[in-house]
Length: 228
Image (cartoon, rainbow, N blue to C red; front, side):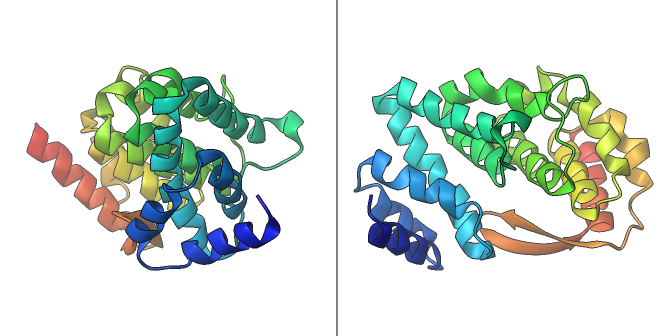
């Protein structure tokens, strides 16, 4: 793909109508757009970055339906970007992996364990707070649509320490995820956060939603109580 077309895709991602963007991108061969979308994960433009994450879900899922091995190559590319040996940082990789898995069952079955491994100090622990933010968002994204897959991997045990993170976004997203997972064992720790005023912003339902750590902890507790 030429530079001009990459710029065109980046410009498309600035649009507020992400559904129309995805429709247009799906008309192109996946191989022509995936590289541009992955490149856009490093964009300083928040909208471009999150729209790239959103678009990667259906684009890679479509690819998997036609050529599963090619889709695996994309997933392994994200994993490599999070590997210390890659020399990169892996910005957006946890979020993109989660978005892809949220819309493709087989990829979720094959790679869901990796998101949990990135949480574990005895696994492939991600130390950078910004990567942890992406990981917590990814866990929450999967918790919405595939909670049983995460529970089968004992994800609640590994989520609990993130409630003590010095990073407010990590704390808030961990609380959100635990609520989505109806984690009764998190109730005591969540209660400690309900007066936490730190503001955060969540990308939810393809839009940015402002919230606070305390509000998310309160909603998580309410969700757990409702399911009890």
